[in-house]
Image 1 (cartoon, rainbow, N blue to C red):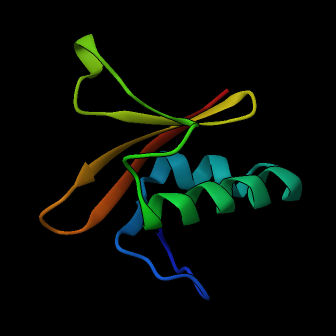
Image 2: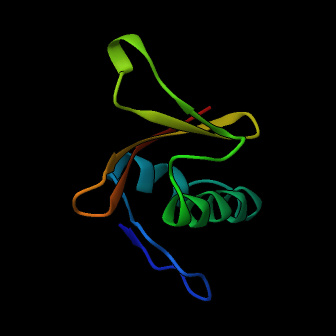
Length: 90
């Protein structure tokens, strides 16, 4: 799934894995709106935001974005300008 962002100047393209897409489609409309705001932020700047943290150890190279009790786990490909959302977990 590729997220199309409108009315916002994006630098990165955000893509969801099948797992993340399945989670997104199966959740409430309210949480979908909150996740959409997360995806918009990731398209603008996936490196800096109060809810972003770089992961360490076995998960080095991944980042997480906190959305309430949920975590959006993603990787950034700077060369291609892509953000790949790997999973969304509770």
